[in-house]
Image 1: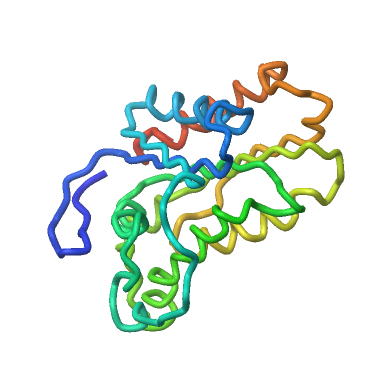
Image 2: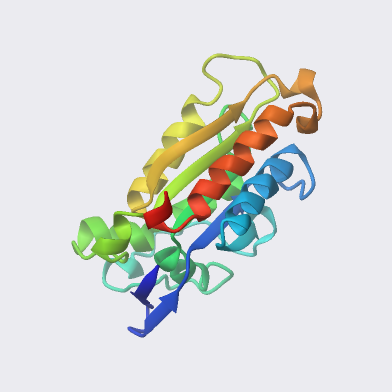
Length: 211
C-alpha cells in the first residue's frame, strides 16, 4: 500500500492490488475455478483484484526488436501495452495454468516473454521498473493442474514461473500443484484444494502489516 510511480512518473495512491493470470482457454474449467477461489480470498481480505484471461489477449510474441533496451515500454502496440503498468504496480500475483506438453501453454509463455521490458530495465540498465520498497512485499502464488500423475510433470512450468517472477521482482511465494486430474475430473471433488486456494489468496490480499 502507499504511493507508487506510474510509467508516466505520476504518483499513484493504491490499496493492495492482486492480479490473477489465467493461462487456460477454458474460462470456467478446473484451473479457472481454482483461480477464482484464490481471488475470492484476496477480495475478502480487502484487496482490489483483476483477472486477466491470457489466451484471449490480442498480442504477438516477442520479436526481439530491442526497443526496450533503452525504453520503459515495448515498440509493439497491442494488448500488452497497458499491462506493463499493471505489473509495475501490483502487490501480489496469482498465475493459474494447466500443464500442456510438460510445460505452460504457449500463449502464457509468450505473455511472459514480452516482459523483456522489465528484463532490460533490471539487468540491462540496472534500473528496475518496480520501486525497491515495493519489491520487498510483492509475492506470487502459482496454481497448476495436470492430467497426468507423474513426479516431474510440474518441473518445467515451475522453473519458467520462477524465472518470470525474478524478472518482474515478484517473489515466488507459494504453490498449489494438483496432478492426476484425468482421474479427479472435477476440482470441486477436492474441497481441501479449493480451501487452500482461498486461504492463500486471502494471505496475498491482506495488507503487508497483517500477513
